[in-house]
Length: 383
Image (cartoon, rainbow, N blue to C red; front, side, top):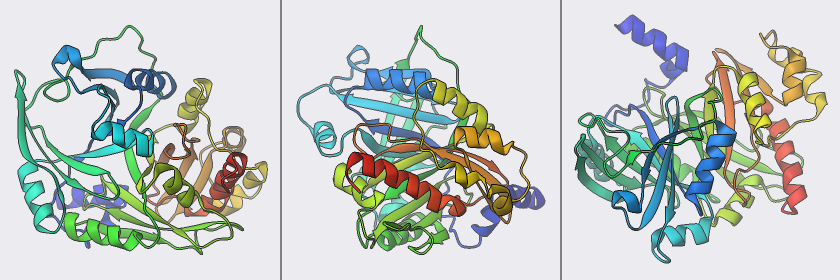
């Protein structure tokens, strides 16, 4: 058993994490991510069409829920919940007015939601919801929650005694329109943007309150261009299934992407969701054909790619055609590509990532990536 566990840790890079992460808050994975959006029905259509998500569950007036409508979509292990308020006031409307469409809940799957709440609140977390039992004919779940950066919250989901489609209060969502999946497998990591001087505060929060370990640090020497810079630290739980990079701005000649995000999101929040695939070329090809817009780097990026990363399985010309970036670390290499913002404000976007041994985050691509982002900022007049 110990040998098998060691082998799994090496695969996911978690042998570097176990020695530092504490085990008082065992997390089984990301349960779901909930976005508050202006029109959940239309957003669901977009994510089904463009990203290949499938219909899972629905809650609204037809299910006895009077204040909101929620659509649940899934693809392999990824679940997105899109929620829109049905009333003209209340916290959801305030969230929309302030932030636009954006992530409210990062739900974490746990064995014991009561213990998760007790462990985190006893270490200083502000409670979002005390342990609560919700049930229907398919069983019951226990939910609890804590506040994190900005207005983002973590909800702990204990579902071992539940056999329903999603959660109590939801019913199966039957749809005649079901575009095929595009090969997305699971959430690799989720990145939070925080304000000036707040990165270490939230790094300490995840370390003290949730037992995470810091696995990577990037400063403004690593992440900078001629004009802008930022700093980032990556926090991970013990089994490596939950990874949260935390970004903050750094001094530069012009406004960084993190400053732009905070200006338009009106505070800290989830900047992007990185979703894994086993064939990034096939995934990106389908997404682009369905209307997803990606950031692209100059062709010159690929002229020295082989010198930087060595031998790879993929055809460099094919990667060049799709604008896919490549980086290598001691464990292997990764391929990644970033969408443009998927909402009207220049805030939330997605990363498509394929890991071929690498457990890092594409440090070698930062310069090219951020220059691509700056070109978009310049087009928006916000650089």
